[in-house]
Image 1 (cartoon, one colour):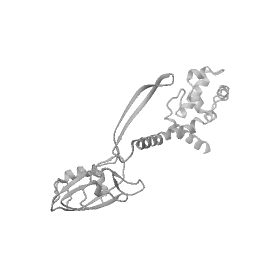
Image 2 (tube, one colour):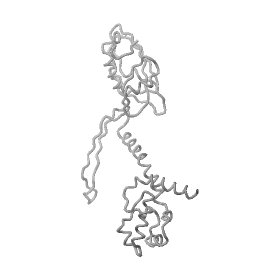
Image 3 (cartoon, helix red, strand yellow):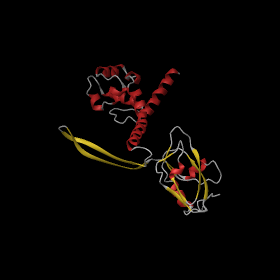
Image 4 (cartoon, rainbow, N blue to C red):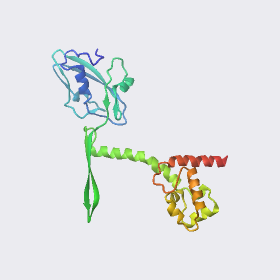
Length: 258
């Protein structure tokens, strides 16, 4: 029984370290809804063990011709390989925690199917206009996923990350300015300027507000102070603070109910 990468498989030409390096090159594809699996590999020499020997009903090997090791006449090998689904890069120290049998050698796992990506931005013409940019992407994969599908998946992940900004800012920017509890004079000035929501107000700069009819310095100062209570301000272009602002507004509602 082999339990260390420094041992030698009887009847096999390659060292254990070479076999491990070859195993890490296997390009494996499994359905996303399946769990990990254990593969039992049995082989006798002489001959060559390739990636094709690892294929099963739920396990597809892309690089079937990959040589894992070369067996001599007296070789009689039985090997069990544990395969799991994952994302990104996982070092052997982490995989060691998921070993099911004592004596198993943990390997580094690179689950990313992307080999490399290149991009170029070039000026381009659309109709009579020549001030557009063209983005060219070159995506190289290991064959377990098509480049266009990898790009679509990356776009989907990016959309999910940015969705949080869309979800929390719409809630607050559509809130009525009446929630700021301004004085009657300031509130009427905003209504006359057709500023109905907090989103309308925070997009305005101090200069724009000051130009509003019958809007004095006291009203401007009041609005700035009220917005500050909500962690907001005039002339906002970065709405990443709105999540905090919503928490503040929710606390205000709880205080009012109390």
